[in-house]
Amino acid sequence: MKRKLTLDQFLPYRLSVASNAVSGLISNAYRKRFGLKIAEWRLITILAETERATPAKLGDATRMDKIAISRAASALIERGLVAADDNPADGRSHFLSLTSDGKALYAEIAPLALATEAELFAKFSAEECRQLDSLLRRLEAAAEGR
Amino acid sequence: MKRKLTLDQFLPYRLSVASNAVSGLISNAYRKRFGLKIAEWRLITILAETERATPAKLGDATRMDKIAISRAASALIERGLVAADDNPADGRSHFLSLTSDGKALYAEIAPLALATEAELFAKFSAEECRQLDSLLRRLEAAAEGR
DNA sequence: ATTCTCTCGTTACAACTGCAACTAACTCGC
DNA sequence: GCGAGTTAGTTGCAGTTGTAACGAGAGAAT
Image (tube, rainbow over all chains, first blue to last red; front, top):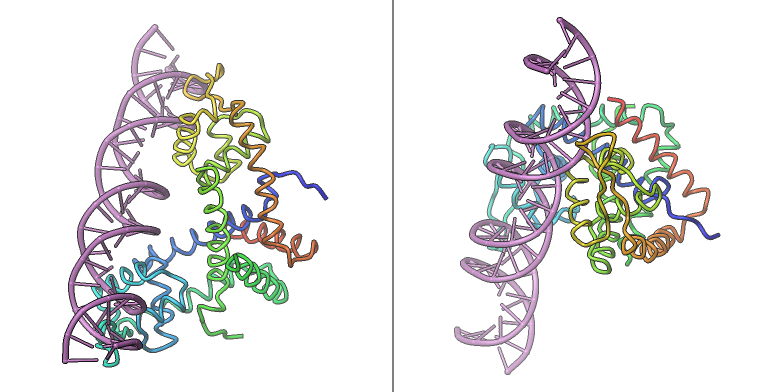
């Protein structure tokens, strides 16, 4: 089937537009309410999940490069939300973890994140959400496999 | 159902990661092969579809803001791929259209775009592609409705 | 006709992002 | 245990992007 190219029906375009719309919405909410960028928000979330981690681990978990991690971590340390401790096993590295302030902020952030997600997907059935998740993961794998 | 927040299962995160992976792949391909950024590529594609349009129209069609349009258009005019003509109906505006060089480039670009898309979605059924398209459009609408 | 307001598009400046170079520290081979 | 090569993380610089102000033109009211 010889398809013609139209931007509107080009799936990578649709993906990008949807992602930008959603990211814009979320990043706006977090910037306004907490003064956090998405990178910082992701770090906080992962640290809440894992208790403590090196920047390299955080990079794996958040799919962000080491520069982004480094800068986000600096900003959070500056604000007293994250603490850095020496890594006894490797002097180049260090462990990052949430301070009590960081944990308190997370306790505010998490419900808001879930509520925003719920609102966005209000008209989606559970099955549709599951499908979308699965399609996105497969697509990601396909894109990275090249 | 009181869900717990985990980044890995947070759909906006999945969307962002998938979109970045796909965008990275595509923008790389176009930058290397044609020296085009995604914004420029989108403009060319829309101009090929619509023949001629004002920057404002292009902004609507590509979901890009006017600054991005302005810069992409300048770059394309610079390269002789796009021409600007006066808009008799409005002296502030102008019409943009592809030059013959621009059309020639589009003729190379379009098949490559379709091929890349086909490769990305090689393991997706037609029905799955349709589903993804539909889910993304609904999500976009939901994100913009707030 | 003149003024007031609004819109189109560009420009100027600031913030952000990413690459490449750097420092410090680890590993391995000898 | 010492030097070559690697790796972790940071920093400096350059290119990119976004925000906010701007000039020019259009439209509407008087």
